Image (cartoon, rainbow, N blue to C red; front, side, top):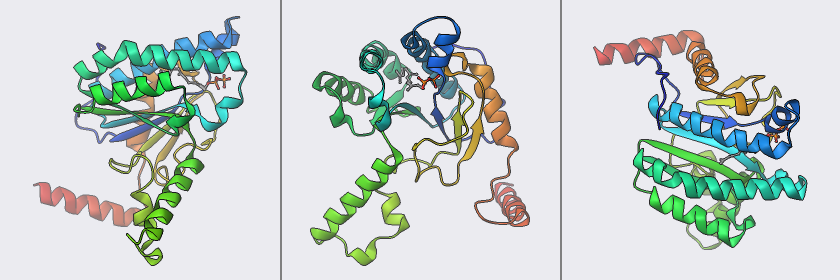
Length: 258
Ligand code: FPP
């Protein structure tokens, strides 16, 4: 994977970026093409975004590829998307491994064909040892589904006597939602102009900075990604504290580094 844009090394980058890739259909329609050609162009933008994240030392990139609600789209579009996931997984897995990128799929994969489930397993296994960037593809994923599956696991553990129901708190639930083994998303980017979260990572986005752009996903490139990061680094993240407290904390961190 090659590319040119590098961000300055001295700025505090997000460790984990999540993206709602929206606007493929409108991009295609605007060019007089079928919606499905927008998804194919979207796959190219995915490649660029991964390259950008890898090159700039972002630790985790989570892409919303297919929501639990997307099954309701016309059958042809769903079929093309499924075939596209298959092709991309097969085609890119070698290059992901070469670039030390670990691929994981989050979501209810049992909803996919056996063929696709197998391809997902192969890609996850081939890249399991990689650690420069974790690429999470959210497929047949919904934030409510994620919280419900975490609650179900906790209920099962309580019934099995492994935990008491009184042990269940935010910390324990957070350990059972998807992506629990990495940093929470610092930045959520949504392309395509809509200003909503659409049932993506509802639990994990609690303290993420949100960035919305009119850019349609197939047009998302290094410049757009860099603009989102640039906006992120200018934000003050307070996590419920006051601005003065945050500055004091930053000051004491700097003292420790000196
Ligand atoms: C939303 O645009 C996009 C999707 C539902 C599919 C995203 C899929 C890709 C980018 C293809 C490749 C992905 C991977 C991970 C290989 P939309 O169709 O809702 O666009 P619209 O809002 O303009 O109709």
